[in-house]
Length: 268
Image (cartoon, rainbow, N blue to C red; front, top):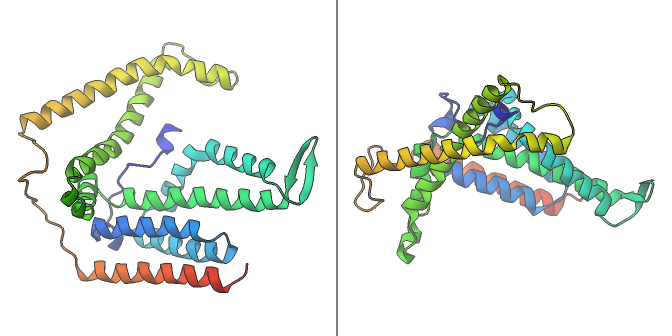
């Protein structure tokens, strides 16, 4: 299951999406996320589905590889669906003993499941097609106006980039620790949920030690190379908008207009 988490990983390819300016992809991800919460209509999600499918196809990232990231949120999705099914008031569809399932709850649960799925897929497109360095540069450039009010934009961008980069590293470290303990007869599979949770406790100590060691090594390496924050730093590859980036902005704005028009005109 740990290897199924794709957030923070980069999938190399030569697609148009990979070559785009990271600021465009950040803006596109925000627009897509906003579009999922503007309306709760089937027609809106049809448009969002077509748009997301087109982006995934253009990115040349295998759909099977991208879907693997959904396994990590399966439990969260099921909890969300169950809560919406049984706690949403409305017209009763059927009852399971004293628990009532409403038609409004079924509709709400279905929309929440779709939203969570599309949120993960949309965010995965950003991280799978953008290297951590480009993502840091794009985020720093996009937030640069906040420097006027003394917001440490460079430091915030660097922290987010390091956090994303550490996700696959720590997952790989966890997998190695689990295999080492399983070789010493540790059992992580049998028993109920509580027993499985207790069996994971011995993983925490070596995992935290490994994480702190890696963080300390990274800090020492940055200091040894004279890192002192964003003041006076130059870029080896400065971000410059190209024609494809301007076209992408137009497409994103057109998509947002289509979502708003669909939500206001079509009733279902």
